Length: 563
Ligand code: BGC
Image (cartoon, rainbow, N blue to C red; front, side, top):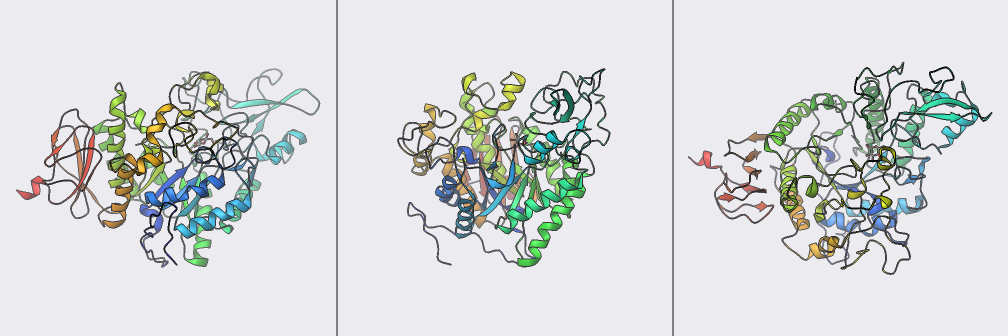
């Protein structure tokens, strides 16, 4: 295959050759996947919303960065009550994002650039406009169509109370009441997110059969894997009993109800999906990936999802929720490496995604000025850890969370359902700044009639991809160099991690033979663990000293080993 040349003249380094032998190390075990939130990536038709053509247009950015593949957030037909996580047709592209022909061209482009393509699959719920749910409403209580969802009669004299006391993730009760065909208030249906996202009943065989068809539809089109939304969901306690949690009414966003999440039956589904992936691998030797969003309380419980015949990976969210705190980082890394390694899988690290406050703002605490340095240090730490990593679009540009969107512009259903700004996600989904000095910063074509679906702040001018590419000291170049070293150095990616004894405030470990990573979580400079200049550092870093809020990589013996 000829070496592809990218638009700005950069020549692509093709990924490390990986054998198709089943005995070879699987590509996903230490892959770095770049998450594309399609809606906010690049808009080619000027409607203010990103699209698949935009993903194609900027795919070279991902390739130049050095990622192994992309994961696309949902682009399927959807009324967009939860920006695509409310799906009305799992096998069609929403016209706002393009069509299947454009999707097929994207598959081809990914192949040419050597990028894996991972799609989002959302099996816990669908849209209230999905044909199955419409039929369930039309066909009434007791119908086979209602049995595909959780419909139940209400409590109280006239059924006016929800069937149980569960709360929804996005606020309010987890049940909504329908109006039956005769115009009277009728049954209730379960939705762990918004009322526009009815939960499927996975004890009904139609549901499992439908999703097997969905997987095959996209696998046949050439995708390399799936990110599974809410992978600890799907099954609920069969009797849907009340939660005994005394705080249940206080909790507006219930993500911990053990009757609604993490039921043992879900593992049978992941075994079945894994078998489907293996079936495709048996045909061509190429491994397909299942990566689950399995938010469960402990790494030990998470390990159950990545047993050898279940999901390949599950996002390790404990760093996504970690404060800027050495002890916290140390503990969760230690737990993850131990518990996940015992399954034979690798840890799937993630610091940012489309649901969380960006690290630049999250790690800043009381002092906004500290955020960028801490976020860059955390990134270098993550990319030195054993296993796979996911990078969320804009992370490589050092984007901060946009925290001051006026109420009237907030689109997140969490805001609508809770009336609170806590946990709203628009601020990490602002359209990307590609170029130029004013909005839309190359997100939409110049002179587009419609503004980007969320406004970009003036501060984005300093973060455009164009500007960062020409600045060797930018966050973009830090990520790019780190990813290049991951490809070149055998110590990085999969392998061992050994903690080092460090001065207070410093976390340090050795990877394989002699790659040392250290992070200074403290506020004062600390002695570096290795003499000589670092191979790479997240900020200015001379010899012998590790400045505050800085991470660095060295090759060489540690001070202790030299003695
Ligand atoms: C996705 C969210 C989505 C929710 C409901 C998740 O966890 O990441 O963005 O709103 O599932 O589908």
